[in-house]
Amino acid sequence: MPPQPTFIEYAWYALSSVVLIVWLRRYDGGRTAFISAPSRKNSLTGMDMMAVIFAYFFFQLITALFAQRHTDKSWTPQNITYLVNIVGMLITVGGVIFLGAARFEGGASGFGLAIKKPAGLFTRTLAYSVVIFGLVFMVLMVTLAVCKLFGYGVVQKHGILEMLAKNPPKSTIAILVVLTVVVAPLVEELIFRGLLQSYFIGLFARLFPEKDLSDLTQADIHAQLSYAARWLGIAVASAFFALVHADWQHMPALFVLGVALGYVREKHGSLVIPIAIHSLFNLLPMTLTIINYVK
Image (cartoon, rainbow, N blue to C red; front, side, top):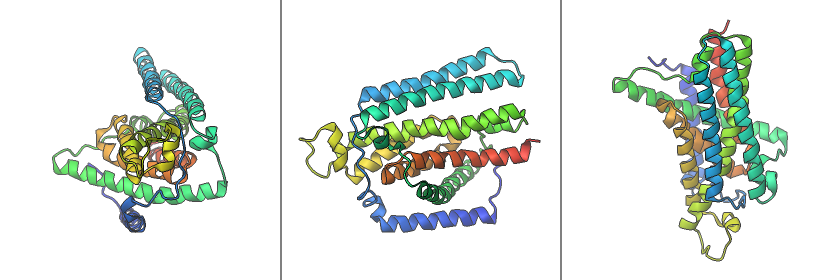
């Protein structure tokens, strides 16, 4: 059975909803949200996307096959499996950063990996996190309520959280924290917000241009993006982001998270802020699980 939200949680959801309403009014329902947003010119291709997606799922498959071959219930094989997953993700991260630096005007900085004014990044990350997490958890609460209404009262839990609930050794906890809070947000934001979202926005820009783009190169299209192209690109990348996570019960909330992170990415041209928000999002349930179950 899903836990009943507390008064503080309801207040959090209400605050996030009010901020969303104010944002919708300020930016005309999202139509004017990206007027001053950076263009992030790039020359990404469909083959680039296929290569990245292949690499992502290839290493996930390697990890799954490794886990099947080491079915010992002791923690050592589990740790090795997680370490294999981390290594595969880090290799993917290196490849994505190399591709992003090669395809985006301005290299790695143009890709969104420059850290400017750390204090401002920290403040924005915290402010966005408070609002975004409230909206995401509210959507999850509604999803669980709908499931319960239709007779499905089971709450799906992420495999990592279930593993932590088994009170693993400290070595396993450390590996899981690195995997979930550091490596996973890094690789997922680089792929979904960094590459996929940028590619789909460029693709939709030709379908929904604000002016004639026939004489522009692929790299120049991003200077003439319409709000429809940006939001469609964000939505499609967010849908992929939600679908790659196995827990269907969490997909609506993860889609909302993806859209919010996609907006931050487009608004500021930075991948650092979405990565930091994603890390905090993963850290929160992990911390609560460790406090409740780990002795």
